Amino acid sequence: MTEEDVSRFMRGVRKPNRSFEDQWLAKFSKGLAETVGEKIRKKVLEGSEELLASVDRTEMIEWTRKAMNRLDALVDEKNRRKIMTGCACHFPEQRLLALREKYEETKDVDTVLRMLREMFRSDLKDGLKLDDELIERILGWGWGVAGVREGDTIVATKLPFELKECLKATDLREKRYHCCHCPRIREVMKSPERRISKTYCYCGAGFYKDIWEKILQQTVEVEVLATVLEGDDVCRIAIHLPSNMAQTF
Image (cartoon, rainbow, N blue to C red; front, side, top):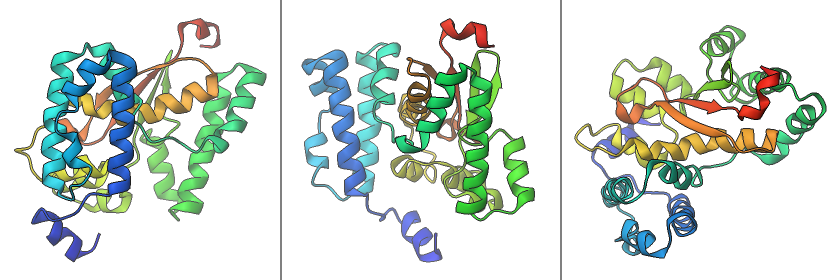
């Protein structure tokens, strides 16, 4: 992010990515319709029609805040999580095929985790061009898609969206801004007076849900343990493995 970008951001004039916003709204609308029906869908999405033509980030954030409040008021927690995880971005499915095949062959989650960790290591080295010392620190912190296994749960800490900037930042709000992956929520990090429900972060948790459901070919549940949206330094997600896998623990 250049100094000019920061300046424009602080003035509140950064414009939303229409492609991201439109796709996200479409997934949110679909999840609402399929999970709680048309009546509640319309109530939660109230005012979203104007957003399709809007280029104002402040309006998008304010609408999101109100929509999450309506979702919290009208829908039970289980279905809120289902709706929001369905809005997630997805890990490239092609890259998960070898992991799925290995699990089908071995039924061993730990073997898959080792493969996923090595894949992540390669991404850090070849993609982000990080040195070996920093890579080992990141893996030691449990950051990245593989996370750390704790019994029947995998705890994954999201790698910051802008890693180097996040590590360099000394201001906590700035650090949280660089940490967050969501272009909408990143804007909130610079404005502490703006509050959006933690429910929104199940969108990010859905990224991990999708990964493990594709690998295991079973439904998994996810839980938001920490989020920069609520003042935490990192975003941490628990992936609860299916109970019928207990024999592999």
